[in-house]
Length: 402
View 1 (tube, rainbow, N blue to C red):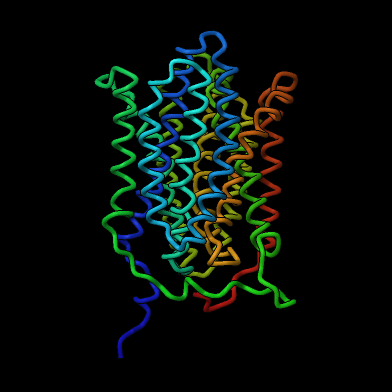
View 2: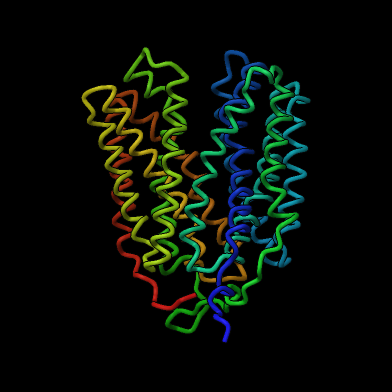
């Protein structure tokens, strides 16, 4: 008699291609938002570049929030992910290449809003596609593979800024090529196995009603990620200024190497922890540990007595946070109550990525000028500790769940 177990698993080849496609999403926005767009704003806005960057960040975050929910939900009701992803990819690339055509700031704002909507036409259905195809007992491994996404996003920034790409337009073309090359294989050429168990009926609560995101583990997973993401967003935006405050002689190359090193070291750790959680049916324990380590790293950054200790503490924080976010993305697919509304629900979860970008500037401006980065890091460490405590309240899944 054939062993049915292999039919309950997705092929590693597809999971690798899927992780590459998710990394393509990171490639689309990390270099563009951190390097290419600020350089374009500097040309158009001159001395008002910081204010216009803030406006674009705010407008983009709103568009990303709306787009994630809208296009995830549309991919649910049309019962199609692949064509939404491909349509969004075409629009994303077209709008990316249209950025040089903007010769005034309000045109640039309009293009960026449309680009954020198009990008989330890719990201929303793509996230839900993983839930459609990867069973629960592989979601830890899937989360580990997703750790490649931020690292590839950072590495792509180094590629598109190579000296051989001298013009803004050539860098955008190179970036567009990388994004298409990463997203296309999984969505066009891959033929993943469909697993009927992943289309199970919506879970019911004790009263026999369909479960919602406002109950059970989902809301705790949402708040835990939201709290950790505030810390991650603050460091992402203000890392340059913090490094400058602890070591004025630190060059940009060393800053970039530390950032990339943290993302790279996190990959094998996330893969190991994800696979361990699958084998031992402990999906949430690595999340508890990584969020606790993230808090410890942030405390170390606040209390470090030297620049070298501060840099080591940052590495600890960066590695642990990257592991947490990757594994959380995989395990979130496990706790969503409705398989027929995965895209919509993941759009709601995507708010944990966009809302911190709106909250973080207010938090930083209110704390850093008067109290310094040390106090800010103590506040952020407290948020990470709260996330850890929230995660410890999530019960272990019932044995034998698919």
